[in-house]
Image 1 (cartoon, rainbow, N blue to C red):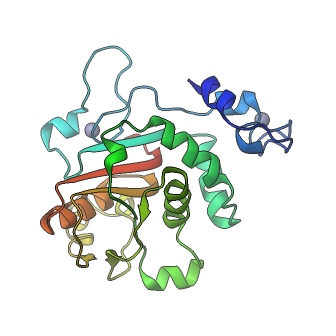
Image 2 (spheres, rainbow, N blue to C red):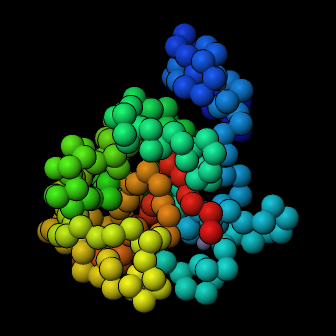
Length: 231
Ligand SMILES: [Zn+2]
Ligand SMILES: [Zn+2]
């Protein structure tokens, strides 16, 4: 599958960010490094956690036990080497150009149902964080996806009303209330939304936004991400 992506991407003579060989995939990775990325080959249909390679199940144990509010997740990678180095680097060094090839690869994984989303909503960050960082990484990815797929980018319907600590750093008890009520939903007429984020760790943020959107009248929420943290 990885080779198909390479063959479909335009070849530009730049250099690979990992090994400095001539680049493919929009010029930023060489063919070898591209093929060796930790592509998710058998993710949970609902939340994109990796499933055992043997067996025919479509859902992970967690989704069978307590399904999230979103319907389907599309992710490219397991969040491990070297994606766990690349994603922070994009953020720290503002290497936004990577979102172009990443969004092209995400687009190739979407099915016809997912492509019916009426708007792409990037996971918002609190205003205080936005001032500190200067930009929202999820929004940059959503912008590329919107251009590529000609689906509306909506930056305003969902907003975050306070900064919250990362779920992964909290106790189980604190996790339950950390995100509660943290997202405001403006007026809209959507029935189908895709939430866009760079990395999904516990899935709690996407779940909280999906819950709020569904409460506001949306019938289906999907999640499109670059990478999923394995548990
Ligand atoms: Zn390389
Ligand atoms: Zn799952």
